[in-house]
Length: 387
Image (cartoon, rainbow, N blue to C red; front, side, top):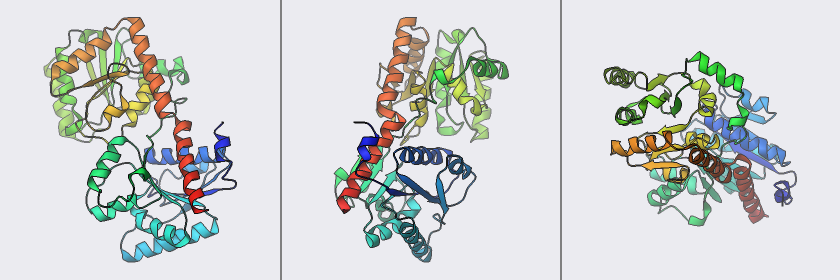
């Protein structure tokens, strides 16, 4: 059965997708990808959100967007939002609401109840604060969680509000395996980056895609690289935003004082992330934050780049230890050093196998069209229930 065959029971279906705003490039890209996929399946997506700098992303792909003040809170604003969403649902003949915004939880639930429309919420993290309000994300026909880690946390934190655990469905955030593939990056693009940031051509490249902040775990990585007997064989590039200037200064001082200038460099060329991934032999993710999702890991694997990460948060779901990379205990610097040296000194055949397994794992578990098809299947189930 093809993907299109799967939506034969949904002719001329209109889906309302609710976003808070258009400031988060990752979330906007995610919704844009989903909406574009739905259009390819002859389903009509209608996106509503506040305005923002990324509104052109929808226009560029021919996607319908309607302005709505989703981020406004308070008793009267909740009523206004509900009325506005209700009106849009009626005008656009909406068959299902898919909400990505915590601030629209109450409003979408009111419309869902009043118009008897199927409702799906997406949960990309477990929120702090008002437990009763946050549990509203579970008041839907289905709640999509972006990882098993989120699902487990939600069940633990909101157990008194969950009506049926079966309605919590894990659909991992996807990666466009065509865009994030070494084949999509030309030799000219790679050569341009090599010249622009003056990369050595006789060393292997390690990419460390972490924002520079206290919880990044970067000091631990510096210690691990210092202990490596093979640090003359590679150049590690820290690529990310500077969120803590004092921490940046401390990192630069350590690199200078430990004589690591030839082995590690801090790069601020995040716009070259795709090209840097394409030429990397290894990606390291040292953050001490327990992340609910980590799209950078899946992007690295989609490029066939093996990864090293700690066992916090979602990481255990994204990496097959020993097959697509290594899960390490970052309390022990020697374990990190050993993992780095294992990959850097690996024989060509084993290195190629590790790369192929990383790519295979990404395609099987995080491929864009597969994940969108899983969401479409939920739409089918929810809509059929209301017929």
